Amino acid sequence: MDNYEEQRRKGGETRNAAICTTVQAALSQNRLFFAFQPVVCVATGKTDYFECLLRMRDVRGNIIAGAEFIAPIERLGRIGFIDDYVLELTVRELARHPRVRLGLNISGLTACAGPWLQSLVSLLRHRPDVARRLVVEITETAALSDLEEAARFVDTLRRAGCRVALDDFGVGHTSLRHLETLPVDTVKVDGSFVRNLAEDGDRRIYLRDLLGSISGFGCNTVAEGVENAADEAAARAEGFSYLQGYHLGAPTIERIWLGQNSTSAAELHWSTDEATPDPDDKRRAPIHTLLPAADH
Ligand code: C2E
Ligand code: CA
Ligand code: CA
Image 1 (spheres, rainbow, N blue to C red):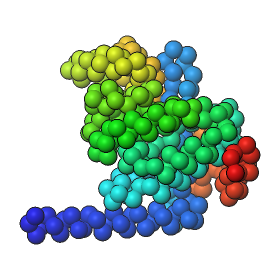
Image 2: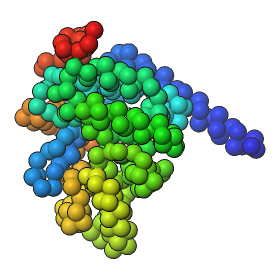
Image 3: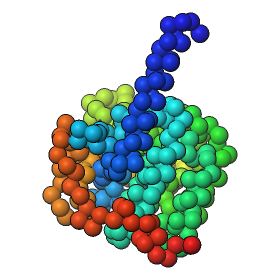
Image 4: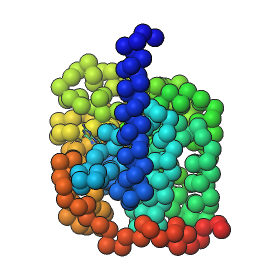
């Protein structure tokens, strides 16, 4: 590696490590929380589940989207503490809101590591009602190339009663080969295939082929990144089972299933307002008080 490349790599690592330290501090000071985005069923027009998307409030009160800090931490190989925390936050949310279904994101790195899965299984062992309302979205990374391990992981999640979705399908490392091996319920097709679908004939032909191949595996499909009515119509015409994107509903930090007025989290990137607290906020309470039937 030449000197320039080495300097660049070291610069990148230093920056990523600084981001990681900032996020660890945010976690310990309770400044990490979710925005919730609906995934809408084409057949019924109703929300099937809300995807939990991590947000960080910085020390000045600005809200930072996951896109800004998750990938750098993943590149360092240190995403585990986030995935652990997200599991705990999501299970608490499900226990407190008995009618809602939620999806959480985990890194492909976590999908090949044992402790996260053990925590999930022991948390949900005696709570099939909570497990049934949880969708685990596995974000693809190179780590998913350990396919046998990933397949065991998916299988265990499904036995625990959860649904499993393969995220960002069509970009990066995921491919039809993964679908042959991984018994997932749902495939989320990356927004880059959906955006401008109405106007781009080549994209549409490519997508049609992709959906044809996915349907052979009996999976549901989600169109991500639906931003306008024309793309929604095109995605419906191509036969997606579910739709997600700003046009169907932007991520909101308020829990819209409670019927509150919601604020677009897309707008909150520039906001310094306090996030609306959950009126029944028990984040600091021990998790067993929220999951009384859990195994102790
Ligand atoms: P993702 O799982 O594919 O999530 C979708 C991202 O696209 C979200 O960005 C969401 O806010 C954004 N989005 C939603 N609808 C639209 C749309 O119509 N157009 C456009 N352009 N974007 C849209 P966000 O929240 O910044 O998250 C970025 C990525 O960070 C996520 O991609 C996921 O890979 C990761 N991530 C987010 N939350 C978590 C988490 O709790 N744990 C882990 N491990 N990763 C997370
Ligand atoms: Ca996702
Ligand atoms: Ca995605």
